[in-house]
Length: 385
Image (cartoon, rainbow, N blue to C red; front, top):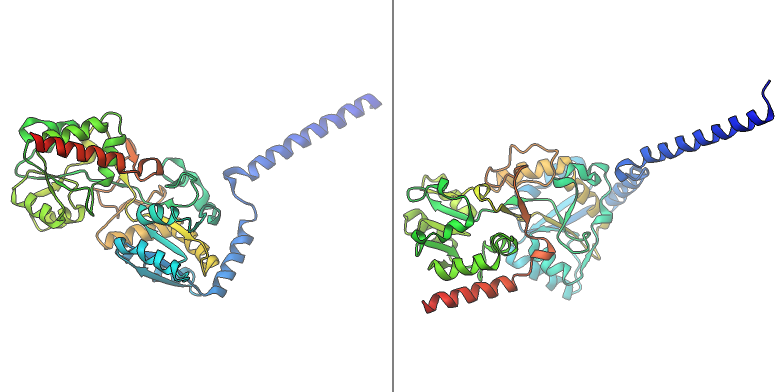
């Protein structure tokens, strides 16, 4: 016969086991921080987006990766309107529209300038982080280094979805043996004095990513920049086409920060030019974002359709489509999503798992003023010699 004491003890043990099972079930249910009600919210958002009827996306890429067809196939009742604007004009256009009281763009996908340097600074963005809803988008394990990347200090406004290995130096294949280069300090070898061409970073064009990398890499820093531009008698150009032509002609064996697409085009034509593989340098390599940042404009006229587009673009299907479409346009960038095929990524842009990268477009690295100051001082010192 069960005593009263034994009965109470069994009831207590049962209660403890029930509590433990409840806690375990709760932990299992919240694994991955997925909102259990996301499906209902997603369905409501899609229905609201259908009523809005369209989403307007401003972009400064080639436009190939934002063709409407892939998105329209999944969401035929939401018209995707893409407006392609040159990088130098996109920021000015949006700000002019805003001053005129026009709110046209829902989403902008372009580079750090203007998404971070103009729009975030002007405080005309709404957080994009709360817009992310699909579990496969929210799952950090699907993304590079296990999480989402943002350029802004708040880590919620300027989402980064591309991470391309930046090319620092190009060379004439008849005059240079790449195997001789294992460190960026090798450019200070006296035999290269007066033989290096560089894109002037004070003008429009490439070079910013590489210079930020030089400055913020402890093994290089301000000392490397100052010595490189004060000692090596570097010739500067602001004409990207001229830089590639001079490299191909053999006038200079090296070109720092030369136009990547220009060098690739010349190489495809059979000219003796190529990029030095940035993975060969022991100090690592800069990782640029290209046109791969995404923002949600405040006062967007189609907020629900924007939410659908953002989740689609960052989904596995959206990023796979983007990589293939950009490859068709000749860019071939590398998405920060790690669970998609990388066969469309151009080798020059492709990341390696064992490489040491610095994502130079992050907020803490964007200020070019101290770098330009050192650059100017180095040039002034070189003129005195």
